[in-house]
Image (cartoon, rainbow, N blue to C red):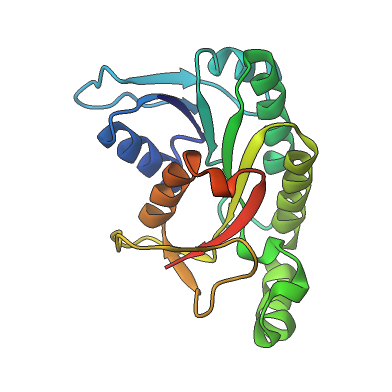
Length: 211
């Protein structure tokens, strides 16, 4: 399988690339400023692509079987279109290249408020919305674009991400945020993204993920 990892230089994207190569996949790493692996890996191709440049995205996805989008803006509080416009360009490129499968990163607060626990619904999520509401709004636009597309998409909604070693375990739920699922390591998110590519039960739906 050949997988395109978009946003391959980010904290999650780098780990997706590493784990995909460890699984024996061919990987095309797409980033605005790609980095070469040391030593070089014959299964890895790095391509300079800005996700907001539609035609470059089309070129970057040539020969790909599935797409993992690790696009993100970190903890920026500024309004953004990175998730929605970047994903719109990926969907357009996938149509041009006859690619069906895409897995993206969203966030737990993006889901319906009624799915949250009472405490999260009335305390945690309102605070997060105050600081990162612009990001969540763009993620909601991204998920709406995916739902309206004819692709086999999956949107993973993690909680707070931690820069810690992988635990080797994560939990998934397609119906609601996970009980006591407050955090997830970047490494375990990368594993979940790769696992989702081949999970038919996650096609065309969002899923909450946490340690």
